[in-house]
Length: 484
Image 1 (cartoon, rainbow, N blue to C red):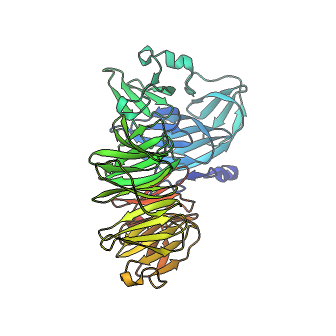
Image 2 (image 1 turned 120 degrees about the horizontal axis):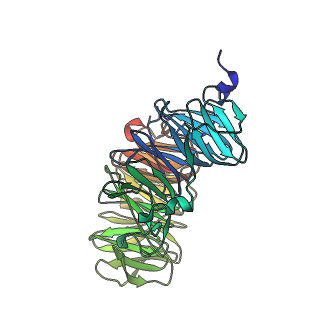
Image 3 (image 1 turned 30 degrees about the horizontal axis):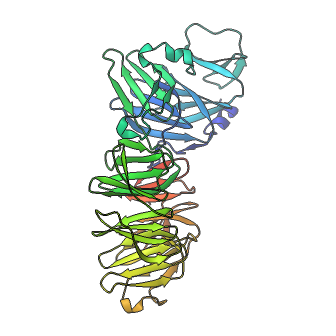
């Protein structure tokens, strides 16, 4: 007879993805605090913040990520059943690797370590307990058997047992940071006999071969998810965040980063160099060398370029700078913030805080096209799609120049609370408060991307054939072939 209480525990814990085996998307977590590591014959498992990450052992590449909605601290591998046991703040979680099924056993108590035996899980704390693997029953005990395999949190004394890890923290490489002597401490160790795995705080995971002592490093995600901008240059995706610049190459997925002392506003990639804004400064960055090109009297909000100019949107208007010079020239809208600039062969389109403007390059004149604030611009088939500061979408037809300033070449596409847009040049993708939606110009309808979670997204963009959607906790990736 099946135990009813056991069935109630099945899939009680809230995780993402909810259908681990069947969901089509993948999750990329930010670099965080690695709390615990263990291995199986095929995988390396790591707890980073509240993410459980599966790495293929050869090569060291992410296979799957599971996000838990509450704290998880310690992980152990049960070789007998091919299970993972995970210690949380108020429960013990069992994950069967082959089927990706999860069971949660509520438990509150201070635990220093846990052991995996043949029939039981043993909990060593102020009071000692056993958990029956078959029934889920938890009982007080007063001694432990000698055959259990124990897992515990890494302590300072554990770390100092490995003298070759001296000084027991890591530094960024000089090309990775403007502060290369900043220390990143060790937070977790796991020795499986052949390799020593070292988890850190926001530096990734390292693996040492205990025969050759060769070292490998895994940078498994961006520096953080406090994102300001997402850019695509030369087949790479760049994430501008509070801690610096994180990027990976489309189709490869190896993450790299560069930390900065100052907060980045926006970036351009020109002639193998980054043009970066820091508050009111424009700088050229090459590796860890930063050269200030110009300091303005107001903060910079956006950067853009065409074949001739760099366009600089500021808190008090728009400037342009001839490439290979540093002298800014007042250009177009002034006094008010400029959020985005989109340049084509014939026009420059400017999204300001209170209006949308168009500049005709041939006739050299400006027109205030719309009396609505705009913060993003993309183009599909000669139509511009504008994201308003009120989080609504406007379709604007570049159309006949004689129509500029009239109400005949734009239309509102109502939908509530769209926070970001991007396009694959066929449909418009929208990050909303309740999922990722896409708008088809042919049908003039919004459709939800069914195979992504229905949560609030801050950013969306297209990378090759993948939809990349960002929340305040995760980066989701879904092939466009699975959007319906």
